[in-house]
Image (cartoon, rainbow, N blue to C red; front, side, top):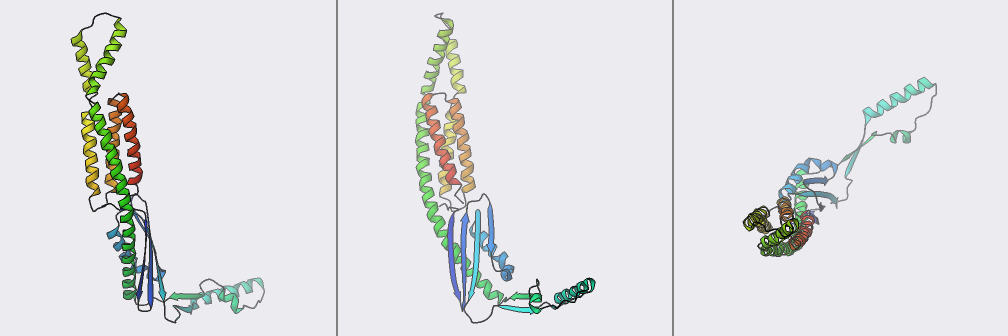
Amino acid sequence: MIKSMTAFGRGEYQQGDTRYFAEIRALNNRHRDIILRIPKNHQPLEEGLRAIISARIRRGRIEVSFQIERGREEVPYDVELNIPLLESYLKIFKQLASLSGLDQEIRLESLLQLKDVILIKPETGDMEEIQEGLHRVLFMSLDSLDEMRIKEGDAIEKDFIKRLNRLDSHVDNVQVRAPELNETYRKRLTEKVDNMINGVEIDQTRLAQEIAFLAERSDITEEIVRIKSHLKQFREYLSLGDAVGRRLDFLIQEINREVNTLGVKGSDTIISMTVVEMKAELEKLREQVQNVE
């Protein structure tokens, strides 16, 4: 079972008169990158929230937004006067008046507009209760996210299987064609020799040796075996309940390398056309693997 890295999840949890909301957006990323948006006064709880996410998601960019709504009729903020700062401002005003010789009246509204004269303290509440609420809503949103990731992963896996079957078919066609290459090489070499010597009799034993040498250099058996092995391993990874995106990406690179060698060695029109088709399927596989965790 594979999971897509791209998905969305949402959770909502009621605890007494407080409601907790969480939304998760998962995007493609080579590594795991967790971004939390949480009320500033609850940031001490961030480490625990990150640990929960890390235990469930191995790869991707994860953006999580938390929101807390309280139903009780009370002001969720306390305000107080920053007396030390206000005294410093008043001292500066007196110095300015003395230096300028102007005795300008200081109005109350002017003082209130000064930065940090009024301090706003968000209500912290019961941190254990808030932590429980945030954890619960996070688990709910992760379950929702997983549901979508699995659904998208199933669609990707079906596409993988379709393309792997096509690659298997192409490899089989190349394998059937491979034994015919020696005869193709023999005819090609004989024609070249005939054109060069213009009817002079040639040593058939030496010609056979040259053909055998050329056939050995152009043998594609090893590449066929490796490609089949990689395709089998690809299928095995699909059945693992783990993050396999990087491993699948590596396998595609290995298969592509063998296919390139196949194209160089198998200097045959049919094989060359088949190699082109195989590369096209591998490119589509590579694009899809970027979406797999």
